[in-house]
Length: 189
Image (tube, rainbow, N blue to C red; front, side, top):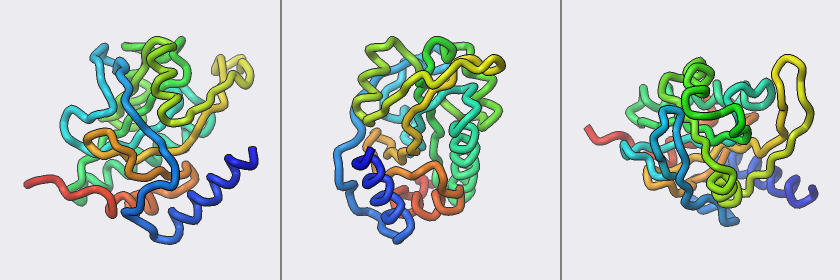
């Protein structure tokens, strides 16, 4: 727990100090291959050559997801208006409910371009391990069903799937856009 608090403190300092273009002081990210909400295979590489905002959560999450995913959607729209196309991506921590066909509607409520990824336990574990994601069933809510605790950082990825930086989910979309500008080039015109 102390190591996690130290990491959060360091990340908050980095995201509020204006530091940009410096590599993270730890290894994070890596290859994965999962299935999107339309049944297509997708890796960490964006097939359209766009940057990505990546979050681990679940489509019907009543907790932190309902704060992080709207922030991501707003940041994506604002970056697009500046000429920087970014794809919002969520990797599920609830594969029993988040399957191809079941994620479309809840993710589209946040943003039409939201990509939801799921897969086998082994495929998902590869992604969780690459990003040091822990998940645990917290309780079963009578209305929402299973409620999970899970990692909550939002990762900014290059088009090649490399982690450029990460953001605590408590940042505003204003701050995410401001920081993302330092890492993402404008789209080719």
